[in-house]
Image (cartoon, rainbow, N blue to C red):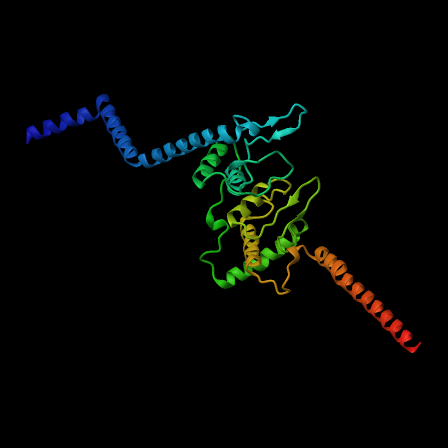
Length: 291
């Protein structure tokens, strides 16, 4: 019993000593480091993948984009001081995904409008370019699918969304894109492109980034749920049939008025002239027969 008491006393004295505190601290650090090492590899792998994607994107950027936008995305000015290629330091990944994903970039030649054309880069290359440009500064990221997709929503919820989207579209978008999204002319050589049969992601990105002559509708101007509503409304336009038979480009009363005046009234005038000429010939024949 005395031996046990002596051993306990020695241990108690050692626990109160400075070395014991140091040993406890070292053990705590080892346990913390071991736990972090067990949980951190996934995050480290993600960071390595992101760095590799940014590196790949820079290589693609230097080959296909640096001539107009500069080697570091700082933009290029002409000798006259005009902008040859805008700076990309704060456009974000969403702008790259829209411009490159729709084939607007790279442009065949500088102009006031970048037309949509066949896509040059693959989806993987587009993602790499977007990652590199996003690393240059701030800017909106590529939107997640739930921000623009109506998957999982009930029919009633979609109907309510479409109604609200139609109201927002008519109030903010028809002045440029036409009442049914067929596009229209803009000042200084620009134009509002047709936005029917366009991927919902690209429509969301266009509202978010404001490409070319389009205004930028940030989440403060049009919240994400309203952007989804506009996209849902445009999806119904893609599915709606043309009850008149001829859409005439969907350009509204201008094209319809031209067709009415040129074709409709022109045919009526031509028919009236034909009747008058036919009547005159018939009268001459009767007069000659009577004589």
